[in-house]
Image 1 (cartoon, rainbow, N blue to C red):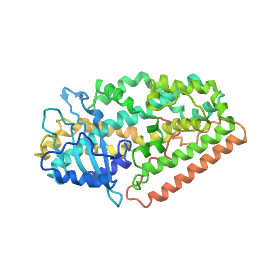
Image 2: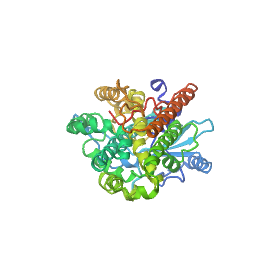
Image 3: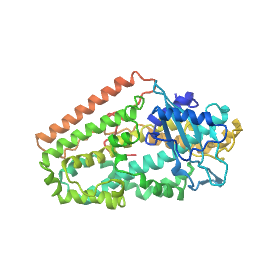
Length: 446
């Protein structure tokens, strides 16, 4: 379906809602300051204003990529853009692009061109390819690596350093850190060589990786790791065509109820939470040491109440399970057809709309790069043969009937959600399966 429909505006918009990187889209509250309208585009501006007033205007801004040094692959300079996409949500749920700006305006230079669906087909197609390539960069380095794997490692390290194995929160959270400790930490020796392979594929290479990760650190807010808050902040609650939003919210609620059930057995009062020094050290270790002082981004330095503890632990478990699955499982589906998500671009972004097919082909990855992308995508996205689904771990960390009853209820709720998603997906042209509990791994693996 991706191969046959990748040029369509509807599929382009759909990917911001339900593709491998559903973390960038947000409802617009105003027209972005970077969106400068050249002379003759008054009608386009009026259309955007109309959608804005109706609450149906959305944006995806890739400004983090602005000024990042592009990679050199096999002696050939690659190129990056920092696009902005404005989209409208139609009553039928389709999200359609209205305007694409590929670069930020520069002082003293003419405003960058705005690409429109009414432009010559090759110009509009190339503009969309640039957006999809930029999305590839931010997805793999930020949504997947930083917010998935590296965040899971922060939680795993703090848990092993601060909580003894008999601690109830250790027992609660350790099943969801198992593969992180066994695979990710063990793979540290191979990280350099792995990134070396990655450098042969993407536009952001070497120092570009590091600079982008540094820039993104300020976006790691506590609220952005908690779907009820994140989806509210991004204006995605109630968007019926955002299956990521619906499923993430349901999965978060199920995990929260399980955490609440276990916490209530071991902490009878808020005072008991405050007086647990090991718990407080664990929380502070994550915020102050692992996340380099993220209290300015809303992460707590202490846990004062049972509700606050449940919220924090749910964030940890959801990050290592559902959130990672949502940005991991779709890679083979969406990236194997290379033009839909070019791993790198070999010519600079167009500055005019005089675009030919030859220019598009010269910009997209060459045969070698495309083959590498398809190979790595298959390795990352294929279903692993020994998957342990969320909640289905065999190890019994708790004894006694009450925690076992809480785990049993957790599994029953997960099974019910899985069935509901299956029924819903049967009615969809494009099923969304990345947050089905039976497909969500119990911890971050590959």
